[in-house]
Image 1: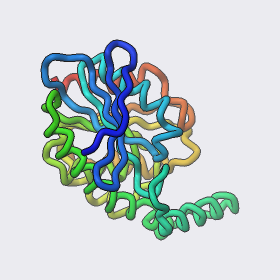
Image 2: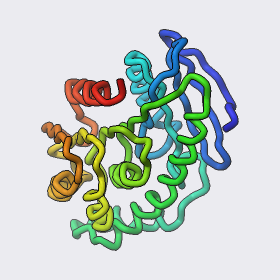
Image 3: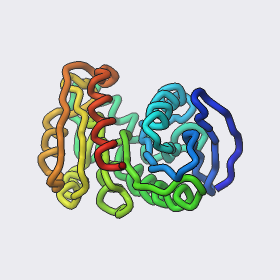
Image 4: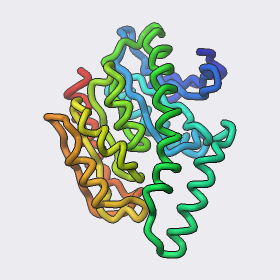
Length: 242
């Protein structure tokens, strides 16, 4: 892990951009003398455009005593293009514009390559982050592409709890994998999310094998998550990471 920049934010929070092989990312750490838990912050891609929102989330994490980190999705930002995903995204736009149904084939080509690449990258990044002084775990996940979060919750034993956002398409194979998830989950669902299949999101929640799982559903579109839903997610993470 090579740190490429360093910036001091409010309340003593340190923001450092890094590269880990071909993986770019950002780490935020609170001002603390003791080792702190870690939140993996998912997002839909484009660290540059997402930066203001990620900083706001990171400052919230730091206020609770957590470090947080985000990595760029494959094919997003300045990373090399992901032709298979780009083609699937173009097909998705075409069928949505035509009012046609989104097929399983399009969803698989759009999501599964990201899952297969991003999950190993997150695990490699987690190895490097937990080797840094000042970060000890436990580890939580917050947000991002829900299929990536589901796979990560299945394969990564260091993950203690996850906040998942039901705001993206889910391949049927990931729906089956969800039955293997056992960590505590807090799932956010925007009821009127124009880019999300509500029925599929409810089926995914039902499939999760966790004994503790909460669905927080609110009226509104994709970006209209109310502040109190965020607070509830924060309280959930606090229960499991402290």
